[in-house]
Structures are given as C-alpha cells and as structure tokens.
Length: 449
Image 1 (cartoon, one colour):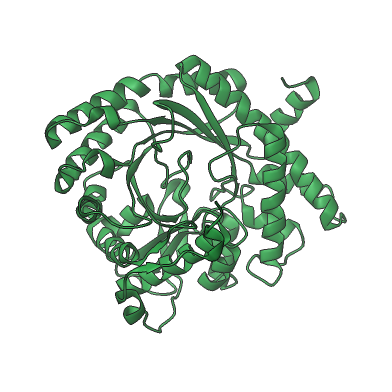
Image 2 (cartoon, helix red, strand yellow):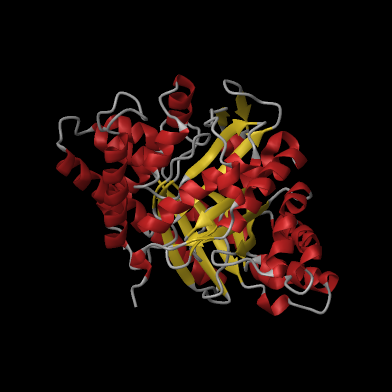
C-alpha cells in the first residue's frame, strides 16, 4: 500500500509531471472461436471479444476517477489471428473486420493481434495470411498487425523479411498518407504479454483472459533529475531507479484493482517510458537533462543505456510482475524531443539503430521517403532483427514510407502519433542481399540447453 508521503508524491507526478497509466490492455484467447468457415469464425470472434471485454472501458474509467490517475488508452489484444484462420487464410480479412467492429462496439482505442509468428519458417497458410495484411489494415481503423520474423534461438527468417518489405510498401500505398503502417510492426523476439500497440498480441502461453498494464512517466523522470543538476551518473541512476519504483507502484495498484473488478487474472506491469508529442513528456529530454546538448549527439547511446537499465531495476523492485517490454521507447514522431532533434538533423536512422542496441524495442514511427524500395525496407528490418537476435532482446521496426513525400518534408500523423520529418535512407541497394532469402542462422549463444 502507499503511505501518505507516496500519495502526495504521486499526486504531484500526475498534476505536474505527466504521469499516466498509458494503457490497460485485456488479452483474450481466440482459440475457442475456430469454426468450419471464415464467416462463422468471424462471428464467434466478434461475440467473444465483445462479451469478454464489455466492462473494460467503464471499469477503467471508474478507476481513473477514483484514483485520480489518467488512464490514456483502453485496449484489447488477441491470439495471433494467423492461428485462428489457418484453415482459410485468404479469408482472414473477414476476421479483421469483425475485430474492428468489436473494437468500435467496446469503445476501445486499439485492438492488436492481426499477427503471425514466422521466426523459424513460414507455413503455407502463414504465407497467405501475410499477404492479407495490407487489405486488413486498409479496411479497418483500430486493428493493429505484427509479424515476428526472428528470434535468438531460431535465427531470422529472411524469406519473411523479404515479404515484409513489400507488405509495408503495399500498406502505405493502400491507406491514406501511409497511415496503415503506423499499425504495423515487425519483431524479433516478440513477447506474449506486451500491452503496447502496434505490437500487442495475446500469446498462446497466456491465460484465457488477462490484464496487462503499461505505465509511462518520462516527465516524472526528467523532473526528478532536474533537482540534481550536479549529480554524477551513479547518483543519477539511483534517482531514476527510485522514480521508476514509484511509477511502477502506481501502475501495479491500478493493474491489480482492474483485474479484480473485471474478474480477470493480473498479468504484468510494463514499465516502458513511452513518450508523447506533449512538451514535458519526452525520453529525449531526459537524455538532455543528463547533460547532452541534443539527443543524437555523441554520448546518446551511453546515456540511454544507463536510463534503460535504471528504469528496469527500479521497476523490478516495485513489482514481482514486471513484463512486456519495460524500458525506454524512442519513437521519432511520438516524442517532441526526438521530433525536434530529427528536424535539426541530429538524429539519423543510423544513430537510432545504435540506440536500439541498449533500449526497448527498436526503430519506431520513422517516416521514410515514399519511393523507398521494398528491398531497402526489408534490409532495415533485417538490420534491426539482427540486433535483437544477437543481443537476445526484443527489437522491432515500425516505419512509414510516406506516399509522395521526400526527404525534408514533414508527415503529420495527428494525436498521440505526432509528426515526423521524412528521414533519408542509404542509397546503396540491398536488393541482391534480400533476394537471397533463407534463414540467417542464430548466434552460437542460442545453444543454451
């Protein structure tokens, strides 16, 4: 329980420092929904999701009012749809439409799980399912898709990586302004309990239903550091750890109470410093508070490594159920500090790639020129997946090749998705490398048994 001092500190965090519960996400298994036809399965999926999560939005709203903690998003994640539609993969968009209708009926923000796990190989039905992703994202508004193309144990499925480059391009061309790509992510080492979109899905190792909560507080961490401008980095790490501990305690309080009221098992608290375009809610500004003139300059990777490690250590001390991704996100369009650094040219894709070696997830919400070749997008996916595979961590890519846009233009996604300058990619072709296909073998540390 919170003592009186912690309550006061938490109130200050909410009122002055942008502390919020970023998302309460209910995971729902769709395996009981498989029927003889796609139409029957889609109807069963709709009914199960609506029935399972019908009290999610009102319950979360009530908790937010009672505790005075903003809860920004209410979301649902489901079993990877490729498993549910394996008997009729070409008709998977029927299930996509049903899930989108369910999201509307529930009043939730996003629904994740139009997903496939092809990290070792792509089965025939998965091949056909992947081809439906652009259509599924074009005919829906709240549905999110993800594909796991590699793992530290199996290596990287380069055939899937090659296909994903084309899927990203098709999605951009079939959705207004390429916005469908903001709901599409490619993973290496995807986790089953991630509450954050666009990559959330309900893993087959999870309970029938579960509540996972994502907490975010970049502004809280920056504010805490601002009171110790002369602290050395050891002391700064301790400040971050203590702050992360308090943030996680608030998240666990909401998570356990939401689970109790909904009659659903509590899963994890994901303590990921997920920024927004609002000033005072930026991971980039934390790094600058540590002493960098601008994020992206030399020293950025070291500062981010310290931040990510301290956040995880503080969170683990506060809860026995820290999971999901947990760390620091570095999306370009969703972080005002990253946006401004990218506009100045201080942040490049190469520097972001280096930063992903030491933080959560990967290359996120980056606008690319609309004429970027599919093979170049595949190569970006392969580079990031390799970082995840070798370092035994989760990495991901969510890029938007903006139709008709060129380097220097700005793409405005609106709302929490923010805006982003179109960033240059390298001109050297990766076509021959990507066309080789096959499996990029796992590193030697995969033999851990």
